Image (cartoon, rainbow, N blue to C red; front, side):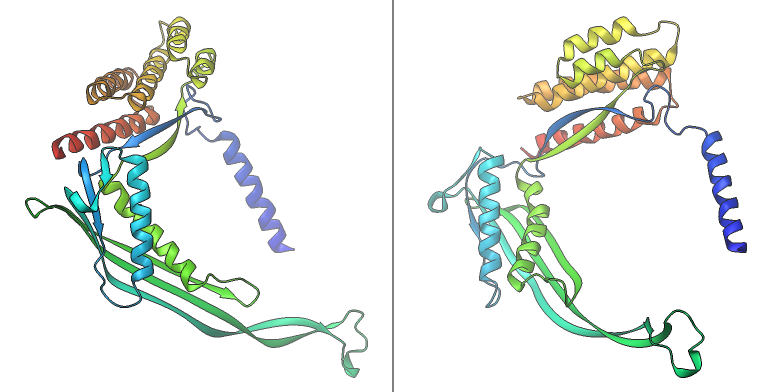
Length: 325
């Protein structure tokens, strides 16, 4: 009874706190966000164009399947994401070398003792009890511990100069346990999982990869920008910008900053739709200029800084890619 009173007291306190809590999100965005979806291309760490081959030296017997899976995954990703690279082992400009340095898999059964209570028929001296009695039992629970590790050394060399252009390492691990009623993965399935983890680390180094974003748009303190947001969500950006400008409140800094932020997001979308480096950097700079103006007008909005960081990081990635060419 005492515990129930304490629980009710805590619930009342929580409700009061929620009612009088200061909103974390500014009024310009609201509690329920209006987002626009984008897909952006991430440049690789090293710039490659021309022909290539993939070399997978055998480190030890039993590694052939993992090597084969990595070759297939890498070739498929390059053909889709890096059209400037063509597979030609007879006349390859680059050699992509993947070598397994450590590979381990194991499946071990382990037992665990667990105390459980069950209802049983009462003994003679407990006949006065209406319900069944409880008795403690020891259960033996069997677990299958499935483990796997894969480590890979990875490098790209220029076949003509024999110079190493890029080198890195990748490590993958799988560790889980399963009870008898569950269906554990086979050794081959664990190997596939490990190879996929390795590919997720290697691919961004040499091929373009893609990332989906869902970015919030400012609605305005009184929802005045919602009409323009609907146009933006339908990718009618010029129409959206006109509506945002026409709805902004000239005498309110927050309203002006909301419009500048939304315009920055419009240019961010243009970045991800651009085809040339010149277009990409022009749109990046315009987006950042508008964000800087929005921050100067209303510096307490954290979403502005999140967008500034995201776009700045993306610009740095493209600058690094340009230097690598």
